[in-house]
Amino acid sequence: QVQLVESGGGLVQAGGSLRLSCAASGRTFSTYNFLGWFRQAPGKEREFVTAINWSGSVTRYADSVKGRFTISRDNAKNTLYLQMNSLKPEDTAVYYCAARSSVSLAVTGAGYDYWGRGTQVTVSS
Image (cartoon, rainbow, N blue to C red):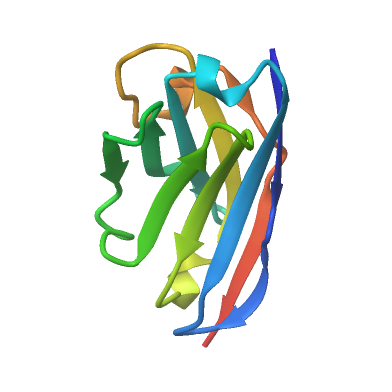
């Protein structure tokens, strides 16, 4: 199995940027076909943010982040990234990375096999 550790969260003003990282140890990233980012705001359900396949040729974004967030992965470094630009207060949440073995894309949490513990992102207005 793989252990996932997110980093890069913090407090930022609206309009600012953050770059999240998700480092993997144990079983390497390349064995997981899809990696994703999810987020959960206080009092809300966890929601899909974005996902990427092994080669980076397939990506999917939630409508709420399309055009502002960019997912990428470096299989050699066993690291997943999320570049977040033009942040809004409604982006405030705990962000989680997740790994999926299946070759098909999934946009629900139930489709992912392993999860990190999350990193807090807070966007002030």
